[in-house]
Length: 142
Image (cartoon, rainbow, N blue to C red; front, side, top):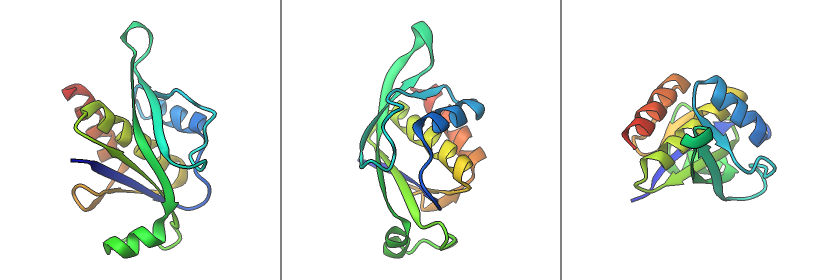
């Protein structure tokens, strides 16, 4: 079973370098490995490093960039400001660390863009603080 998490935002997506810095400011030990690949350059797997040094672990998550309007309308999501017209969503399977990557990326992107995080798996909007807490829980359970 796949899990999804979406960030709705306005404007261009932030750079991978800015997202990594934001994750680290939020106290999340994740680094985007390929910091030259822009989020708007298509969809696909984003390689992520969890922790640093000898404890580093390579993982990652799939990311897809698209139109928020279509998704909000299709899913009937309420409470999303129409100005948040872009989306980036993350998909992962049963690997908890991949889920932690998705939540870390979502929290960082929402922080940088003033965006909103929609937890597709629960059908609710979550705060950045809740996302950070979920990220720590998923990483610890791995």
